[in-house]
Length: 379
Ligand SMILES: [Zn+2]
Image (cartoon, rainbow, N blue to C red; front, side, top):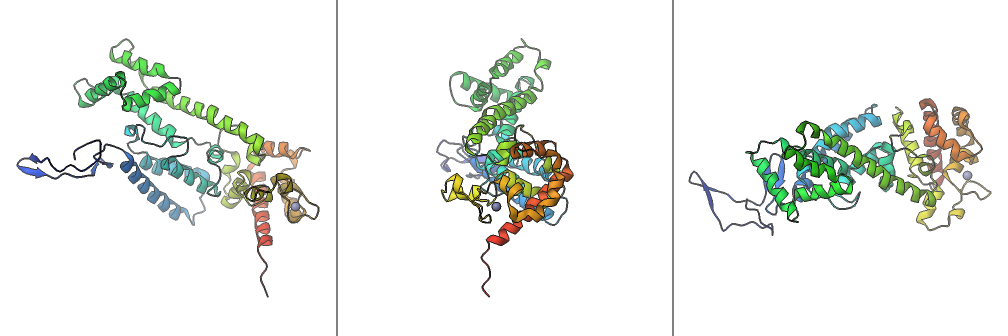
């Protein structure tokens, strides 16, 4: 393969090895990653994505009838089987991923897996989905892998090809050119970690003892996660709180996996996710799609017009009065005048048993509501 900027298949040169002509090609798989003449990584990344999707599909098929569909088992499978396929050789990707937090196909795939684990709709907000599970974007893993690769530089033998390639990359970067190194340098600057880059050359000149520069990628990852939570999650949450007052906005404070996600009953757990992440058909959310003013998104069951919020559905609507009894005794310790406060405290400190009861109520009440809204059969 002849690398060239246009990415075209150049056939005018002939190469021989032991008198045999070597075929020129527009695609070559080396160590499981597809390379193309333009040197761009997109084709290789796309191929990894297809492989990951197949593996994810196989896992879902395998677990379809299993009772062990807990969030933990899914997350373990994603992290140990899917992630290594999707992010294979990602240290070499450079800036191949699309800009923006959730724009890349890799991230969209990650989010779609998370949505399926939670059992929420495809259009459920990306930030809410990740925050509910306490997961960080794949981009953070890609950048950490890149830095981890760079971190090896001072420890490579100076006569090795890899060392020379690194040295060449640094030269390009120093003269203002775009390279793999300039990319990671920019990322370090964004995280306020430019020192790590400066110190790297000090290790090569032995101004800093090499042993003091090991395992810095752990620090890098932690900083990348902190910045993500601080800048992206908190600013999102602050903006969102002004716009919507769903259970997520009311109760989410810490960026970590929610306690109720440890429930072993998969259906009850998913019903809670649907309610918390506003992935439901209650009038308060549905009305938004039909441009109905918030104060007019009424519950169709209640005779006195009442806005059908999550709070109305959970605590007030007489339609579910009978179903509500068991749930009410489960959350009696958290019952305050202010229902928002009740929910926030319940999701933080409630027992799993009580959460299961609430999940059961939500599941059954959703079902009842769905039956009501179906057009009645003509007899
Ligand atoms: Zn009602």
